[in-house]
Amino acid sequence: MPQVDARPASGYVGRFAPSPTGPLHAGSLVAALGSWLMARHHRGRWLVRIEDLDPPREMPGAAAAQLRMLEACGLRSDGPVVRQSGRDALYQAALDRLLASGDAFVCHCSRSDLAMHGGRHRGRCVAASPRPDPAIRLRVPDGSRIAFDDAVLGRIEQDVATEVGDFVLRRADGLWAYQLAVVVDDGAQGVTDIVRGADLLDSTARQILLQRRLGLPTPRYAHLPLVVDGHGHKLSKSSQALPLRPDDPLPALRAAWQALGQAPAAVAAAESVPAFLRSATAAFQPSRMPSVPVALAATHNSDVTNPD
Ligand code: GLU
Image (cartoon, rainbow, N blue to C red; front, side, top):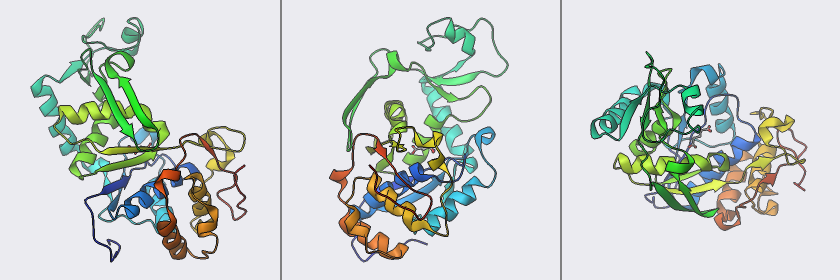
């Protein structure tokens, strides 16, 4: 059910789009809370999309666990939760258009073919022999330089032709590539603002290029800092990537709030999730979001300490 908000709605549409590869951990909660707060701050809508396109990488029950944790944190989608696994027809239609316009092409290259040619696919297939299961790639001509202004990180530029090359839209194993699905869905759902972890920054230029090829508008982007543990290690590699506890969400919410660079005092008095979200919405300042990796001292238990 959409949440009731007395303030006038704006055209802002944000989203949180987890892949169900495991339960939410402290790092993914930062992206969930950050995108939710930005949407509330702009009086917009916030959507949840489950990116379940890669069955081999999925963990059974992870999507349900993620939704349970979001619910426990009071972060509810302002619209039906969309699952990418049910949207083949949309991705196929986009792919057909790109094939028809010549922007996409069938590619028989194997990894070893590419390795022998510098690792990147540049303009033409170098396959030693045709394969029964070719991939489909986007043609990325020379000069495909993309620049955008990230709300947290500032000006970002990437030459997609030389730094990435012709990238995959449908994999040789028949699965849709993340780049295609995310662009088609953000477009179909009218997403205006993408707030997500900085680990996805490298994909953004590819996505903007694809939006242009498909005639879709480019959203605004804000990439949140990578969350590391007290020793500077990526969170997913540390014990703090343990699942969060839906029966005790406040410590994790407080830690996520601090990781977003917000003042701990603003939510210190909140003793319930609704009180936390009210205080957080009122006090949230997007300009405080840090542009460098942030440490998270304690997250999944009730023993929250300040990050050092
Ligand atoms: N599904 C992606 C992930 O969990 C995020 C996609 C996105 O936010 O663009 O890493």
